[in-house]
Length: 166
Image (cartoon, rainbow, N blue to C red; front, side, top):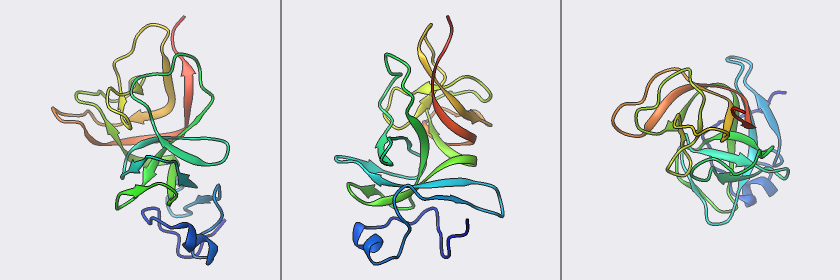
């Protein structure tokens, strides 16, 4: 699918959508030059999302910042990375990446190529796991994080929650 003028960092208003300046909420876009896949989502109430925030997408494509820590049970919620070059808030629309290379907010001292879960800070991932905790399947950091939580190179493969260990 080709979306003319598609820009993953653009923040849209609902008025923009009504005027045809962006596709319908839930639309999927695959960039033919690099294979990255994005979904257009609307931001939930009380949210302020920035580039690299880890979010959950519900069945109505409402983006909510990933809560700190892992959920108590396996949640079959889709996980994505917010693509917003400026802070986006309630009822605005943004592209959220679900596949391909990207930058994701990761906690201090996260290592590459290890299992990840929700970080201690909302909207981040971390490699601090506990037995039988839920983990994120489909986000793989490709570099380590230093002494400060930061945007970190990663590869996405349609991330979602799953149970770890047994």
